[in-house]
Length: 116
Image 1 (spheres, one colour):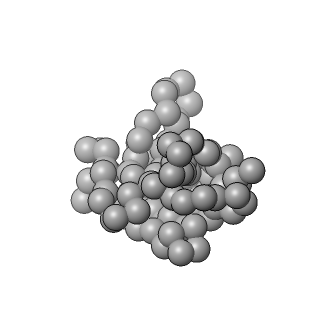
Image 2: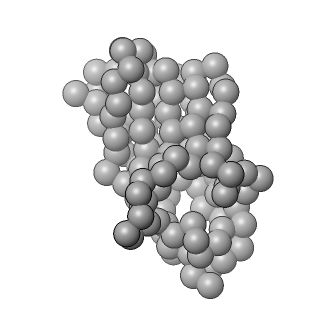
């Protein structure tokens, strides 16, 4: 059993910053990658950013230059630094872990609301 717990969401004004954290615990054999996804009401869940064990990153075009993903896999943690937030960034943000066997695990999500 693997659990992921996100934190750091909240309400912020446009132009502000937030830092999300995701800590994984439980029976984790090895982490291949972790990432952040988001889902706004009425929309599909979309990739925001991901990072591999080797440190390779991938970002959605809409967040490039504003968001930064980082990881400390020694403590099974991934972070998302979000700067210059926009109202369109408002969504529930979910953490995802992919283990050595390519199994996916998801957190429960943390809400980010950006006011204009």
